Amino acid sequence: MTVNGVTHHVDVADDTLLLDALREAVGVTSVREGCGVGACGACTVLTGGTSVSSCLALALRYDGAEITTAEGLDENDDVVSSFVECGAAQCGYCIPGFVLMSAELLAENPRPSEQDITDHLEGNICRCGTYPEIRRAVAVAAERRSPK
Image 1 (cartoon, rainbow, N blue to C red):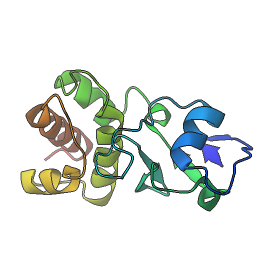
Image 2 (image 1 turned 135 degrees about the horizontal axis):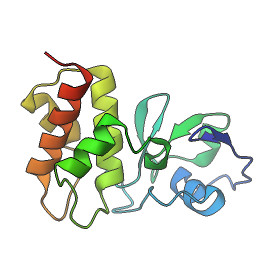
Image 3 (image 1 turned 180 degrees about the vertical axis):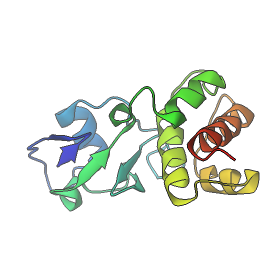
Image 4 (image 1 turned 180 degrees about the horizontal axis):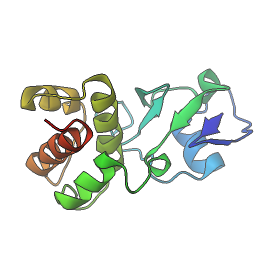
């Protein structure tokens, strides 16, 4: 698999989760297990620009795939920088998943409404409750990417 532009040859068992392959074999630490059942978004990665709950996905299914994790985004990326500027992180545990979901949303819909943002991010959980800051960060990133 290619992770953040680097090809990795990873030997996995038939039942190895993508989450575990990324963390243990590749060394990606932004992919985190929150709930283990695909309900919180902490394990989100992008493959082909589409979000995947890596805690539910078998690694074998992603043989040859291109995977993007939060580490694969440039620190000057509009989404990343807007999260920093808007103070959209307290503990930071959930933020990689939110950042990737936001990047997915803006790739699909460069000018999302407030409701579009809320709807797209509804599968991600922030236990610190920074939802207003997170939604604002996505709106700011959208404004930067497509000025009026």
